[in-house]
Amino acid sequence: MRDKKILKKKAFNHIKGAYQEIERKNYQQEAGYIAAVMGGRLNGTITSPHTSGSMTFKFDTVIVNDRGAPGAAENKYGADFAIVFKKLGVGDEVSKAVIGQAKNGSSEKLNKKERERLIKQCEDMHRHTSEYVVIEAPRENESGPMVRLGDVSQPLKIRQRRISLESYILNNLVGCSHGDRRDHFVDAVQDSSLRKLEVVTNGLDLDLKRNLDDPTMDP
Image (cartoon, rainbow, N blue to C red; front, side):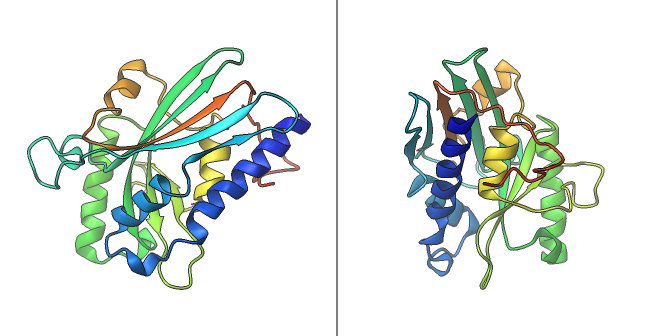
């Protein structure tokens, strides 16, 4: 249990550090900012000091089809990136994935045209899976990227609650409360038409469970 907490704290700080030194103003497009966070400082391996357990973050930089082009990721999935999680070497191996969209700032503050576009993108993603997310790139004076889980029962087809990128990856994705485990879906989203962040745990069981005393599971 101690090793889990140590590794999780190191991973939490690693993810947070990945965006703290990236200047949002240097990226006009939100997708470019998210790619810089995931494809730059986030790459790396976090190792437990007491066991062989580790957590690896790997962003595959691929050629992404232009928006609107035949076969483009947005046309196919309504998404512009995928996150794949794999648990290896401990108990039952697990593979799962989510797809998502990147947006500038809070989704609730988008103009009418962009709100309508987001709704359609979420509906397109939902046709493939209920496990989708919207990552909101920070605007000025905001600390970092925020994540909203998909929910077609809501007006914008996403949940109202926002959580940090590091909390989402560790508590929801690695914590096994979010992600599509269908083999054909996991295989499909690793196609080169999507940007892919891959999170792998090796040698240490990190199926973290929430409890009433620790509702956020933040370190």
